[in-house]
Structure formats: C-alpha cells, structure tokens
Image (cartoon, rainbow, N blue to C red; front, side, top):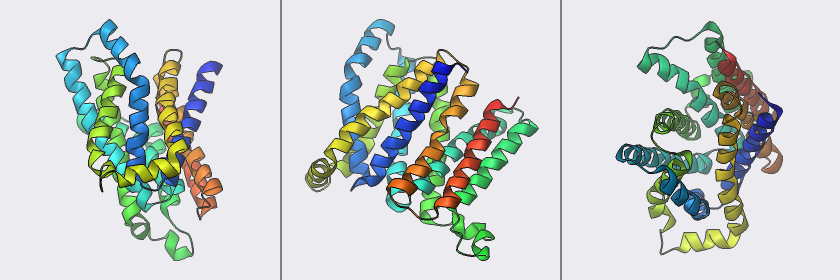
Length: 290
C-alpha cells in the first residue's frame, strides 16, 4: 500500500468513527441519521447528476441501485437502534467487525470458496474480540458466560447490523459492475431517506425541529464526514489493492472504541479497547491471508 493510500484510508477511518460518535451523541438517533443523510444527498446531488449524464444509467444499474437503497435503508434503521440501546465503544466494534467477518463466511457457504488456515484464524480473532467487547467483566463468572453477554438486546441488534453490513458489502460489490460509485451512493441515501422518513416526521416534525435545534452543527458535520469517508476509500482503491484497503480501513474499530470511552465516558474501557484491538488484528489477518 502506498503512503498516500494509507493516509487516505486512515483519514477515512477517523471520519467514519467520528460521524458514528456524532450519531451516538444525538438525541433521537433515527432523526439525526435522516437529517444528516438529507444534507449528504443535497451535497452530492449535482455530482450524481453529472455522472448520470456522463456514464448513463442502465435498467440493470437502476435495479441494483434500488436493491442497495433498500439494504442501506435497513442498515440505517438498525444502526440507529443499535446506538439507542448500546454504547459506541461496544456496538461500533461489534457491527463493523461482524460485517467484515461474515463476508468470507458467506463466500464459503454461498459461493463454495475455500478459506485458508490464516483466514480461519482471523475469523477466530474477530469473534474473540467481539466477545471481549461485549462482556462486562465484573467477575470471573461474567467472563465465562458468553450467552449472558451476547443475549443483551444491544448485542443482538449490533450483530444484526453487522449482518446487514456484510449484505450490502456483497451486494454493492456486484452493483459496481453496472453503476458508478457516486450514483450508487446517491441511491443508498435515497434508501435512508425513505425508510427513516416515518421516524423523522413523527409528531408533526417535532423530533426533527428539536434535533436540528440541539444538534444542528453535528448534523451538518456528519452530513459532510459520512460521504467524505466513503469517497476517500474510493480514491485509495485507485492506487492500492482492495485486499489491503478494506482491512486497513477497519482501524476505525479501535478509534470508535476510544472515542466512546474518551468522549462519552463509557465504562469497561480496558476490555472494550482490548477487544477492539483483537477485532482489528483479526480483520488484518483476513485481509492479508492467502
């Protein structure tokens, strides 16, 4: 990986973790998500129109875009609910780590691909890290009861969010054969806006007005950071291999845990940051495995 690509990827990871921090700090998560997506949609509308004019948009590309919109809309709903129930320092590593891990598992189950010993070890590290992040080690008994740690509603929704991340990652990879990344991203934002709309408009715009009054600056910041993080990864992909870019991007898992502990004063900081490091080690192992 080139130095420039590494800088772009690390910047993307920081931006991604930061907009997740802003989402977690918001009052009503789904309303905040809808609001900053509306900002992003407006910012990228003209570039998307330009790409449609230059590259065109086939019916196949449009169908892939609509499918991606539906999946991403469900992701926005699940992520918002995840942060309603759980801490940033636990939910963020679980969702991101599980999303990366399920992709090779799906490759084996659906596509019949082989997984090397190194890749299997990487999956094991991610699972161990997710468990370490979720457990609340008040005693030895807590460490030895994984069902208790992973049966919490926040844990279940975070795992579901990870499953949706894996789903849209596989779908979007196929979609990019038929549609430009900028246009696909615009479809994704349409999905967020439609699926989260009932929550954003609840109570005759009362939640929406209140969220903008209290967290207006955060909404604008997230509206810029979220698509910027995505664009930086796309630029990095033009200079380095996806097998290096994808795992390196997940350094943001540790950043998310650190931000939750440092800025939100979330508990169990040592175990969550340690678990996040295990998740990143597993992701890097997956990315570098033959």
